[in-house]
Image (cartoon, rainbow, N blue to C red; front, top):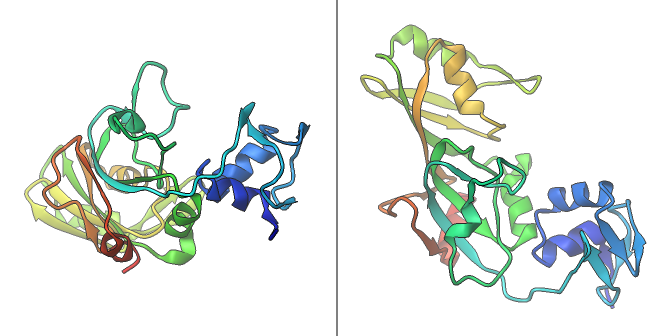
Length: 232
């Protein structure tokens, strides 16, 4: 049997993205044949008894891919506030174990990719893919040229200086902001650094895949062409 790194194996089984699987390994959540492992480079062939947080890992052959128009007050991660609704709770009737490709915070709506394919997730979120994300932001007051210049000038996010790829005023108090890697709350922090308050934030595009007319809270399966558009 061909062997692969355990982090890659877990991702191919639909546990999470490869990066998240590495975090689970470092946290001591993964066992192989009853022994806790902490090295994501450990090689396995799939014949081993592998568990994550005590639950047996089964290889998933069928990969599923969805796009969701994320509603307000839903979380992408189960590690958030207790009692809050998870994005994956919206997928009634889907039996596969799902996770999001990247995250949107609780107050942000719009386009979100949901899947059980960890390798695909890693490809999308890896900085080397250079995938653009487009957001529409409604602010608390009229946007001036000084505001636009301040947003374009960039700010610090988690100790790293970031700048948007572009920022454009589309209405009196509405902006279109395009970012690359998309660090945590990057768009909100860019706008706040310019002295504006975000009243509503919606992601409308990932790569060349757009939200289109998909209603809020609804989802649909991605076609092969849809998946290609993400990388274009």
